[in-house]
Image (cartoon, rainbow, N blue to C red):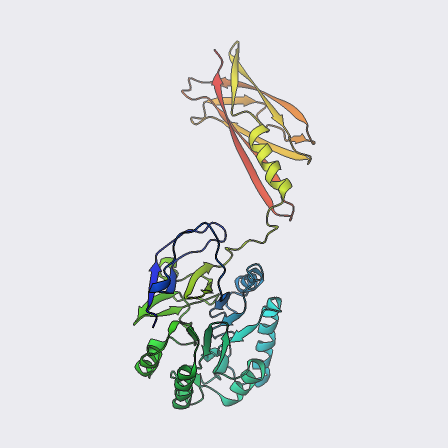
Length: 401
């Protein structure tokens, strides 16, 4: 018989896509990983995404998150409830909200989407679970509690807000769950629900059932923040995608995110990924990268001399455009104590064509200053996708001996 253990690490860095917070992994003690330079193929390996509440609160963030998921190609996506705002008596209005939500997640296709019912998905204006609204849900997403197997993992969807069984796993559903778990031969079991399990009216009954089986994680939402806790070797994880939180403290779990879950043979791991942490492959064009690098090296020298001429100093600043695009250079110069003055007082805009140079000459006067002036160059730079960067460079001066 294999012995399982849950290992968790704190904050870690992954520059590729900005993973944050906690990495938790299940693995067999007998299969502890050893360092190797040769990749070993897994018999069972897949990745999926867990989304939290959205409810049309921050539509822009949620839509970008959905679009970003195509870049990591999950096997499937699970959302743990509160997909719509709901809480209405009008069935037509409920249908309209589901139609709106379906358009939000349309870019996921052909990736399978598995819905988990939340209170906002099933409740009427009286804030009670409504059989009519549940029927609409079933027609779109299937049974409100169900199970499926993917490779070596049994996945279980539960309903924490069935009509007349709000805030609990009702007797019939609990009996079904007991049979489902008992009959499962999967190496791992992962459970999804909407409400936090610990706050259900029959929380102890549910936990005591789950801990008898190889349940690795229970994912849920409802409270619009992230948290993780371990209880008897089961990882309990709250997630929130884009619903408004009651507090605005990221270190206390209030940040928009999704969960990336990875299964590799005996291991099950997950990591929260902050919203907007994923960039598309074409986020940066080669020409933008090298043009900005060229500007940083060749636009202007780091220091230029002030050459004495009677009671004034002359400064000549050579500006170079190393790119094949037209650039406009805005120049402003001053000293820390404002005791230097330059002529002309208004420095004209410098328009540089591709591979073009321009010598900018200023005449300076000073009143017992202990500082030499410096100039700031500002270049508006448009990227290949139409966004603007304000590139700046500082040029310092020194008195020529």
